[in-house]
Picture 1 (cartoon, rainbow, N blue to C red):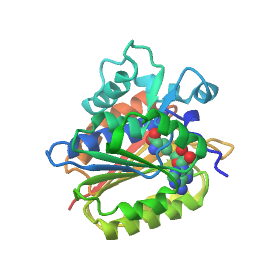
Picture 2 (tube, rainbow, N blue to C red):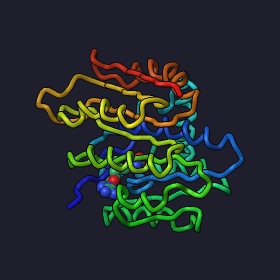
Picture 3 (spheres, protein in one colour):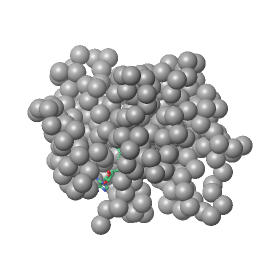
Picture 4 (spheres, protein in one colour):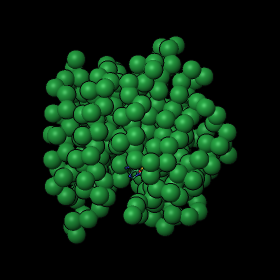
Length: 281
Ligand code: SAM
């Protein structure tokens, strides 16, 4: 039984990090004319309302996109991401937040394709509704992304970004993510893989970065954004990380230029910090 609904968390500090990185990765793929595939193993609903429903119950977006909204001193990487959010909020009021599928859809060109997986019956219904006019460039699968992705790799154009973004409420998501990416690399070694993970107190989360680094000796970037000390009751998200395999060669530098600003903007206490690690090709 899946209980996670991304709408509670849409636009929070973790979404800011994840989506700002995804925008960079897609922009880089679009530098060549040849088409690419965007694969989202855990797509969510696609677009979220921030002014009604689940998001209003937690107000988490106020810890994330809410703090960037209206700022005129954004570093270029974040300005690029906020522009994409602004495209959904043309009147200047922050009412809607784009999930990863919608961000990718906006950045796709005629020659690019997207493949989305979503297991939750309600979320896939909303996703299908949001993409009802997308046509055959976007294919949506109601099913398990960890398993379904095997049939798609390698993608025909041999150029792709795969986002692996489980909720990690089930601790098996850690091992399933590692297995999924390991298998995917066997089928498609040159793809770009972006894996999001939560910073929480559970041991699986603490060990995860080292396990990710073992997937491939070289050619990865690891970025973390910690916004606060771990909560005293041991529960809750105090930061997140993104691990990118086969990244654009410019990504580590861009992150090093951007993250200090982001820590200032989203940090909640003295423990706020970032880390950018990088192994070149
Ligand atoms: N990628 C989305 C974004 O950035 O906007 C957010 C995804 S949310 C963190 C994780 C989603 O994965 C939830 O909507 C959940 O229902 C879905 N999910 C959980 N297990 C899944 C599985 N095995 N395969 C596909 N989707 C799954």
